[in-house]
Length: 465
Ligand SMILES: *[C@@H]1O[C@H](CO)[C@@H](O)[C@H](O)[C@H]1NC(C)=O
Ligand SMILES: *[C@@H]1O[C@H](CO)[C@@H](O)[C@H](O)[C@H]1NC(C)=O
Image 1 (cartoon, rainbow, N blue to C red):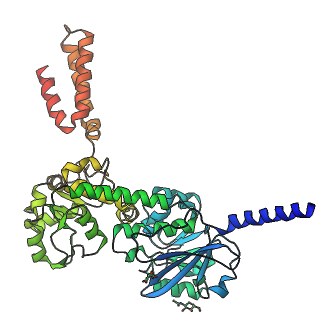
Image 2 (image 1 turned 180 degrees about the horizontal axis):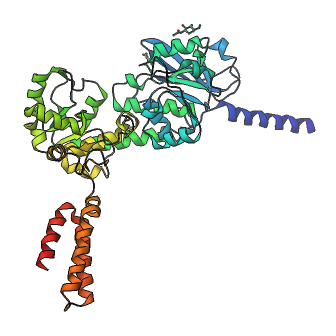
């Protein structure tokens, strides 16, 4: 009897342990619908534990990973020789690029970050806070060769469970990690090779598995929001757009099948061309586009460009104030740009902004622009003309508008209001205190809401009074 009970208890305990260690009920049967650069399959190991196998490829060479919840992984060396095995959630990540950072942020898994090369290029506020508060090691090379990853330092850091790489730096990174005997912990996140925005974003499922965070519902929401913005855009007409600027003597529009080309297509906006063009040819074509997006050269450059290339002032987009740059979230201290970070993981947000910009009817899609900033040619010319007199526009807001009028009022409006109050009090004794308060109050409110223009108006009123 007792023996039976014990056996039953033991069975229960074993099942409980298996449940903790072995299975992924939250991810089982999760389809991969948009990404084409990885396959996810489920299998059972010799002990009956469930594991995920992720097949991917770096430069055409197949690379596979096994993710298990079990601490003991030695048996995989026999069943899957040469395959890197990770016990998830992985604690302690070295990340190689900002998109991987955005994946952690979106998943609420920023605590997993342990090392990164050149943290100044990270936009995410949550990740920056985590870096400050938790001594995340910046493994940037501070001696020659500058700005690369200091692999020697990286190899000495304890507590790193996975070295996450992308295809871009894959070969050299893996060779370097190999030299330190760390290639067994290399994990490839190859969103960069995907052909569609949703394909790139779907890698959140891999990062979710690695960090033990829910990614399935998150991705479904991203898809729903993306498709909904796309449907709204498709119901509108199709404006022409010119995307990008030039470098040296060549214009670089987004090539077909790129992330940007797909976003524009889904925003129902038509890029004029997809082929790199010599400067003069690009100029002639760009001139006709209704919108000019992501001129990529910023505010000051547009001014300079208009000065150097008068033809730019003649662009349909410039004349109609339909120029937007994707630099609304660029750090002051570095060139960290959130467009290259969170927009990849949240293409729905990027698409809503593009749809709202290129279809005024869809302005309601965006409360506050996070990636794009309207660049007004007139403002640009102003700011270059009046030197540093009151350079309130340049990079001071995230919305792309000039600094709010309130700032101008504080400096210029208040002295006038004070003088006006005094004049009224001393000069117009017949008026009661209530009336004075009313007038001052009214002027004060007008002054605050009207900005620089109010200054002139109030001066005129003061003279009249
Ligand atoms: C995913 O599976 C398909 C079908 O078996 C295969 O053709 C493709 O090459 C696989 N992709 C990767 C990245 O392994
Ligand atoms: C890394 O080392 C392993 C084992 O020594 C080897 O099989 C693999 O080819 C190496 N990879 C690279 C990219 O150097």
